[in-house]
Amino acid sequence: MPATRRKAERRGRSAERLAALWLRLKGCRIVATRLKTPVGEIDLLVRDGATLVVVEVKRRDSLATAAAAIDRRQQQRIARALAWYVAHRPDLAAAPIRFDAVLVGRWRLRHLKDAWRPER
Image (cartoon, rainbow, N blue to C red; front, side, top):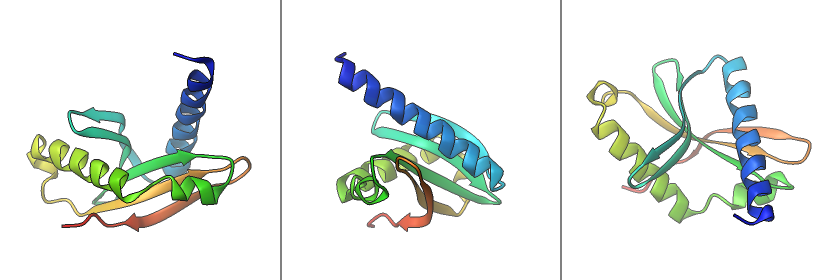
C-alpha cells in the first residue's frame, strides 16, 4: 500500500474513533464499528434510544468537501449494507432507522442527523 494511502487510512480511522467518542458523549450506544458486509461497509452503527443509526464518517480538509464526498452512489451502497445486516439480524428489523453523517475537518466536527434518506 502506498504511503499516501496508508496516511489517508490512518486519518480515516482516527476520524471514526473521534466520531464514536462524540456520539457516545451525546448518549448513543455503539453497536458496531467498521461493519463489513458483502455489499458494502458501514463506518459506525449506533443506537440513539430505540433508533438504529447508520453513521458515515468523512474526514477532509474542510467540512464542505467532507459533505460532498458522500454522494448518491455511496449512500445507496451504505443502504444496501444496512439491508443485508438487518436481514441477518431479525431482532433489528422493527427498529426505526436513520442515516447520519459525521464530518471531520481540520479543526471542526459536525454531526448531521438524518443526513439523507435512501431511495426506495
